[in-house]
Image 1 (cartoon, helix red, strand yellow):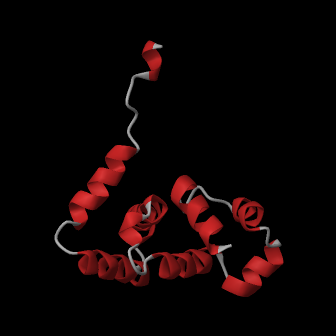
Image 2 (tube, one colour):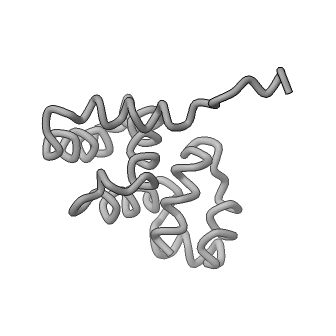
Image 3 (tube, rainbow, N blue to C red):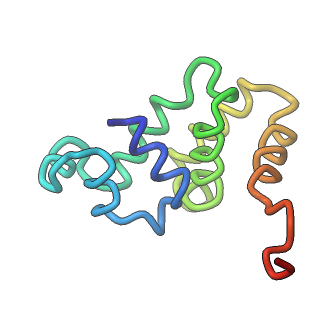
Length: 115
């Protein structure tokens, strides 16, 4: 269930992701989701805590989730910012390159307008 929520947050983004998207992905009922996590942000925090362990940097879905956290939540959410900072500091000096490479993976390789 956490992995499915992580994939949705990483693919859609936190702000664009609706509770209905999460309900569909996790097969939880809306009430169960709120009871277990309190809010969409609470679920995101739990997902981030479970994903950013071990060799998280080898998992493209974990990198997408971290990028979502950095872009959408970390600028105004100190606990999320701290989790992101801790994960990146634990990774080491190549963290910026790691994130940059993942962002480049999402760029189109051809111009769809020229097809």
